Image (tube, rainbow, N blue to C red; front, top):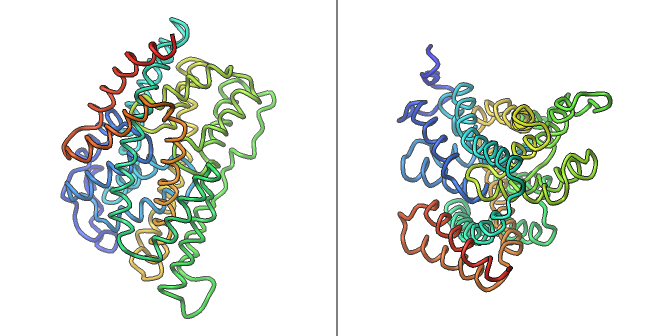
Length: 399
């Protein structure tokens, strides 16, 4: 069977795909190059484009992918993109979709890293982020609204889980991973209680807890690139949550423990990730470049994204095999409600940090209005306009 052909086994797929592998790869390239707004927006774009508009992925497959991505550690949007490639084209689809999704933003942050080290600092970035950060809030608000409407609907139990996770995420400013599993188990027990407990089909999901051997290594007497690989592998393997959840972990290792970057350099690295498209976690490429040039950027990115790839493709067959059982459907529904609730809470956290004054509040509100009023308006247009506004307004407020 050629690499570009889907798995013909009817036991593993419901129907033949209506798209080619290379169409999915090109879509992921485009999303990685133009998808602004971080993980919240990116998962919304995939639902809109792949499920609603193109019909490439079924709603059930999308929900399974979102649940798996939220269960496992690592960057949410990248894992969902990998799973979307896996749905019909298995390992080749997952691998190529993942590479295509991450590659554009990686190239961008490497180029920005080169400019940063060559010309010293990124003073203009504060002005750009001033506007873009506010526009991103508007974008992710609309993406979260669509996700909520499609996945939660009018189900009272799911709404209760959704609101609880949203509140907890906002209050704690972190995503509590075990609550996702607890929500899934709750809905499973209430809606499809097993005739007997223990050792059931859901036991297969324990593969999500596979240990990562690299975490047992130490950085003593290791070369710089080896230190980078081990540290960023830990970041990819043990940090749950979407996008910005990895930032505190990175700060503790990059600034406090290893002293690779200063506080200002680290803040600039996070800003780079926020104003570039694709996954926010790509900030690791910028950090790696500042520490050890192009080899450092490459090693940091590979070490961060390899665990999330493995945590997606290893459990995926079990999700596909058992995904239609009533108990698993209920389990996935509960996790999905919790995941989207956590995403909604993270929107409020991001808004609190990005809405700084009246101009930024106005940019966010106008972005929401434009996306609500003009359904075909592309998000990159809003991001570009917000960047220009930031360059014009920020110097006036911060001379």
